[in-house]
Image: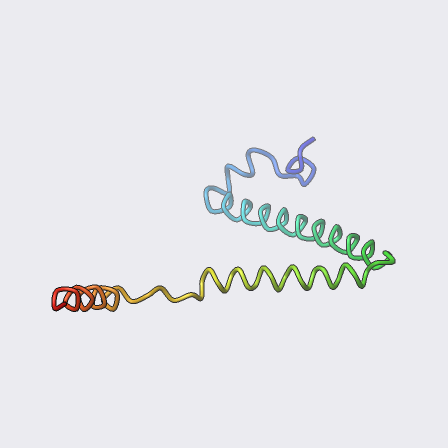
Length: 104
C-alpha cells in the first residue's frame, strides 16, 4: 500500500486537484523528505559528538582539529585573498625595462 493510498488520496483525487494541487503536494512531500533527512543527519552528528566526548584523547583531537581548521583557513585565504598583480603595472614595468635596456 502506498503512502497516498494510506492517507486516502487516490488517483482520482489527484487528478481532480489538477496541476496546482500536484505542485502543492510535491512541495509538501519535498519539505517532509528534507525535514526527515535533516533530523536523521542531526541524529547521526549528535551520536558522533557523543562518541568523541567519551574518548580519552578528546583534548588531543580538539587541538588537532583546531590546527587542521587553521591550516584550511590559511589555504582558503591564500587562494582567494591574494590580489593578482595589476596587468597595466606589469606592462609599464616591461616597457620601462626595455627603454632602459635600449638606452644602455
